[in-house]
Length: 138
Ligand SMILES: [Zn+2]
Image (cartoon, rainbow, N blue to C red; front, top):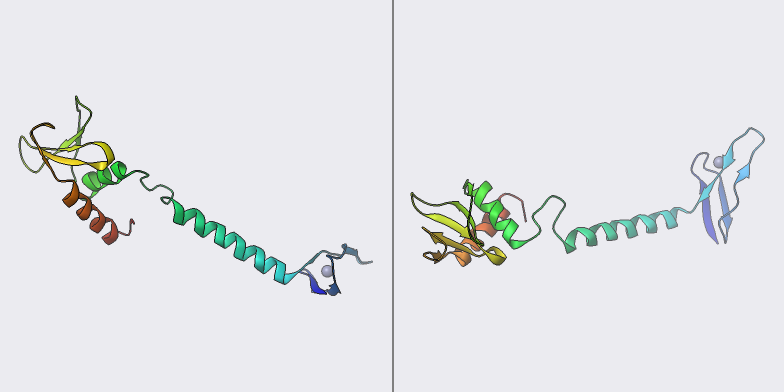
């Protein structure tokens, strides 16, 4: 037997299955629910909610590593994107004539052009993760 309650008037009924609504002479209708069922439902909803957000990036957050690196470059390091003529995305660099180049999977290079540059990927990703953590973005 389960306890069923009308949330409007508090009327209680013990029954195996959910009772049919009861119409009273004053016009009030008791609609019954089981508090334990409601609680379990809420727990389930909460679990689904958590799984949803743990599995992927939060809403509005960058989805790929490249997106994250570019966010770090533009928001964290205040670099500006420049037009690029090759498969790398080009950003203002550490000094005149030097640029940051972003390739596949967030690979980062620094130098006057993409072919004449050094890889900064490992260092950049480490700094990016630190910056994300400090700013509550990860
Ligand atoms: Zn009622």
